[in-house]
Length: 415
Image (spheres, rainbow, N blue to C red):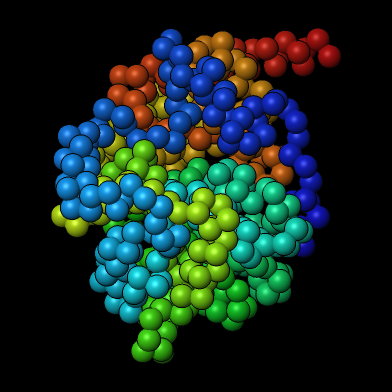
């Protein structure tokens, strides 16, 4: 199996490559400068944040709940918001969900951390989409797991046996970070079949659901799991579903949630108690005000055309200036374009130094790889900047590639 390979330490090519925290520091020191075009962040457009609506919701929440939301609260979160999310999920999936199936978290990142703490002991196996969200890798790094890449074709002859040993499968079927891939319904169902046969858990992380640029992704894996259930009671299947308002509203609310069978929710809540005692009832109450009137869906409908325009601007400029060296698919949702080198001689870790000189930032593929060995792609964000800024960033990136290739040829000629 691949576990021996995937247990290798990530190569220390540069200090900033080791974790998302390192990347954050790099972004602050470099990508955050006014003279730098950053295509690196995984951030919504700040100018589109609904500041007035959030302010009104905060006033309404305080008037409604008073000092109650200034207190410590239930570790599971604000009951009314848990009930609202349960009702939404029930309507979307056709299943039976109650507040007992919902845990509120400080963003979906806390949910990933709690899942690792509950399910994984050091050295145990996680089957995960590859490349994988680096925040998930960081969340589970203290557990020192081994990894097996999830091949959505499910053709690996050893996959079924590995799945029986895995503590869970980590999947991001809707517009994955970093690749932007939308997984077909057929492959979702096929993976669920195998998870059910193996008797393990399936984590469905869905932070980008609200950013549907072209069409709808179709039913979640959770929906397919509900359809398989024969129990008339509340949901008791193997899917652990993660959601958040960070993309549909604002990330600063730090409101995320886990939807799962009640026993898993209880275990996660017990672990959460030792992590933060309770989440912020204040921000949960603000989210409740907005979600009760469906504002999160309304806001998503307003920002999607802007993001679509920015995606198209990135693809248009990249086709003109980067297509000789990189290839990519058009993402139908999410926030990123995954650009893969056509020439294995283009190492995107090494290229970054030249990007710094041109004052443009991206995220290299090595940080999304279990081993750090994939150094031939880069994640490029299109949601954070205007089309004009994106175009300038691509022009700078093209110059960086030219200078990188020239320097490499000179080095090879001198050898």
